[in-house]
Length: 119
Image (cartoon, rainbow, N blue to C red; front, side):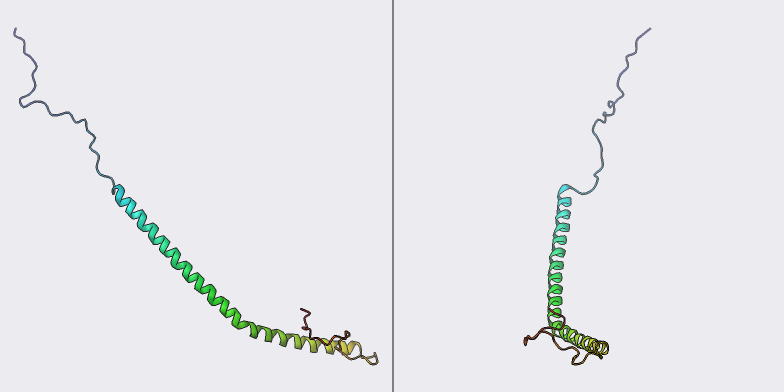
């Protein structure tokens, strides 16, 4: 009996696949860095423009309030005058039996003007 030796096939064996064959997953590091930088730059630009707009609105509100002060003072004076007339009528009704009583006459002898609300 003759021995038959086991030999490789003609052309050799197929090469052994030992390397990892991973597909590319997503963009590279420079693309990600560029994207993050662009998003941050856009965010800072939006914050800056928002700050400018908020500052302008605050300035506009301040000037609107400054211009409304005379109107609000006049309204307060009118309300104080009407309240003074109402109080004088009530005082005159209550003190009608007291001789020499003048309603709303200041009991203090001070010629300086004082605001009716005592401020």
